[in-house]
Amino acid sequence: MKFFQFLFALLAFMGLLLIGCSDKSQSPVTAVDEQVSLEKAVTTYYTFTDSPIGFTGEGEVKAIPGGKLQLKKFGVIELHTSSDPLVNGIMVHNLSITIDAVTGEGPCEGSFTLTPANNAAEGGVWEGKYQGYRSISNVPGEWTLPLKVEGHGKGGIIDGMQVFANTVLTVRADDPVTAPLPSYWTGVGEGFYKSH
Image 1 (spheres, one colour):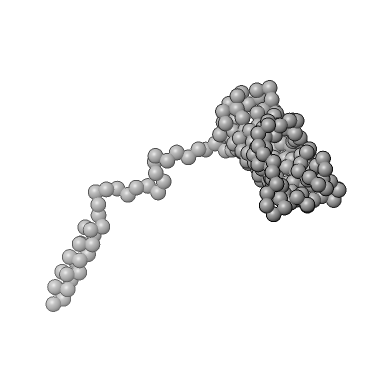
Image 2: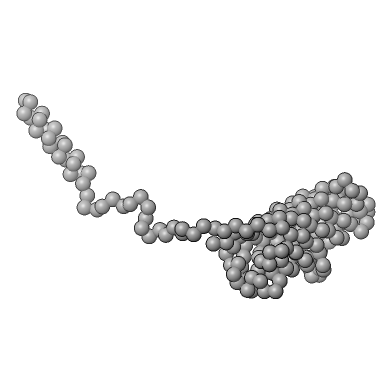
C-alpha cells in the first residue's frame, strides 16, 4: 500500500511540474519596447507685470438676471512684460467674468495667446487658460483678482513646453458705484516654464 501511495505522490508531483513548465519564456518586468527618457526637465522661473493696451472688439457686455453683470469672451490686448524674453510680449485673451452689480465681486476665466516679442521663440506662442475670483479690496473703487494661469508652447523653440503662473490684478472701474465692470487693471506675477 505504501508503494502505491509513493507512486501516486510521485506522479502527482511530476504532473504539477509538467503543467508549470512552458516553452515560452517569462516576459521581463519592464517591456523592452518602452523607452524612458533620461533627460530631466529644466525649470525656468520668471516674474512679470501686465496691463491692457487695447481691445479686439470681440465679446459682449450685458446685464443678466439676479443683479449680475457679465463680460463674455471679451477680447483684450495686454502688454506682458518680463526680463525673460520667452515670456515677454503681447498677450491677446478672451476674458469672461460675471460680477455682482452692487459689490463687483465674482468669478473670472479666460483663454490667452502670448506671442514673445522680437521673435524670441522663433515663431512659437504660448496658449493657455486662467481663472480666479474678483473680490473687493481695502481701497474704494478697486478690486483684487488673483489668477492661476496654465499654458503650453506651440511651435518654435517653445513647442511642447509648459508654463504656470500666478498673478494678482488690481482692477479699477470708471464708475465703481453704478457700473463696476473693469476699465483698467495692472498685474504683478511670478511663474515658471518647463522644457526638456
